[in-house]
Image 1 (cartoon, rainbow, N blue to C red):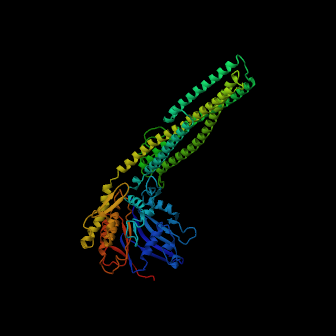
Image 2 (cartoon, rainbow, N blue to C red):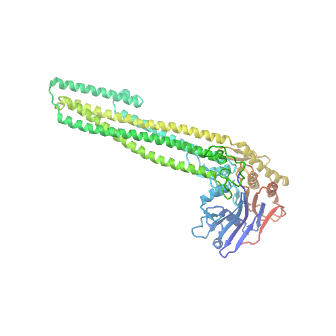
Image 3 (cartoon, rainbow, N blue to C red):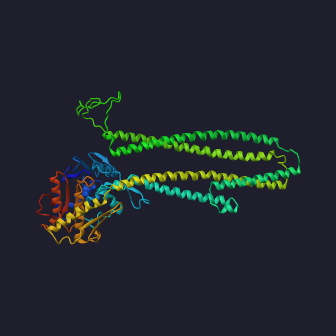
Length: 631
């Protein structure tokens, strides 16, 4: 339940120190006066003070007035605490700042601070459009305020010129369900689903690329029509090795038939190549040891990071549940004996018996500190893992190049060891060319087989992401399953219907609709119906009465625990309402007066500020009459 917001007074201070002010009371406050008496300007001033991102010229269009006031202030009560919220529109460097008790805030900071003062969720994010394709943005106090303040020229829609998704999110917030329908888990789940689609696309592209390359590398007809995987590639490598062996046997037979027992081995070349091979082999062994060490380290760091992630998740859930804040020390940390706190009064600590007067314990800060420490450790481990993985990749690439070099040297040594390796013969040369081509194919296929490890990594990431998405979806479904959409819709609809029923009692013909007001509420939108038709089909006075009933219905939710409405409404009536100087439009306000009196009888503060030309003879209201007419 939101804490109530109660306006005590609003004032403006000139550069000469002159103060102009309006005083408000609980219940219904009427600001009346002739046209150009400044009613709407006062309301614009309140709107401006409460974080509107605008210039002072928007409040005082007159050039002289816009440079007349150096301070605009409102004094209010939130949750029984008094706050002064003000702006210094002419102060260099502070024109865009909002002050709360002399602490300055930017527009976004003010939004977060005022929502926290009202003790409602302040970090809700919602999608600007399709949750899967559009950006998620923070729901600001200003968006919500558009359902609390009805401007003089905003009587055609629930919230004039507010996009549907923002309007629904604002209403969901006031109805106490925005943090459940737009939970962080839902946002993360959608982000993970986008990432899953990207990984699946990468996997498909990778498989297509590998298949195309593999098929371009062979003339094997059966291989061309088979699906490609690592086993198929290994089979092709085996076939190439068989061909290579056949060529080598054929070459050996040719040489053996031509020269029998003639050794022309180039011992010098063999020794040099063997020495080079030994050095490369030794270097590869060192690289292999490094790969083993780094793999072991990375696994250790990943286990540590996972344990930190699990602990961080538990702390956040514990903080949200509020359980830890209720725990007490029951046994001595030194001897483990049960602590007897029966002889300790409330002004002394039951453990150390020192005075606790003036000491404010903030147990939740301990959790926040632990969360912050764990998040720092998590980020540091992420950086270490990133660096280690990069180094591991470098070692693996080097190991692969060294292995390929050893493979080539081995093949060259095999040739050197043949008795007639240097024999210049066209037939042997042709076989050597074929042999070289097959060796190159084998190397290329082995590279493709190694690249299939990347596919395995993608499949592993996809599998883990699917598990995480399922977990997040289960949490979101649990959160939304606790929302009773029908009950919430009925609460708001019954309040709105109560308003039109009350005015119909005194003016039976003023509300021309015979059917009831109904509301359809779902996870994605809220729709209003009158006579089983969209409320947008209403026209003229019926539409204005419907919008008044909307504010009345929201006000009725103020002191129900599950809602976040702060118990205040600002209504600037259109010119055609309240423009006469008799009681013909008093019926519009009577339901609000009765509602405010019912709150007062329960010792609950609530406030409505209504602007109009003139209302006379209404009891139990604070009538603020503006006399001066500005030409």
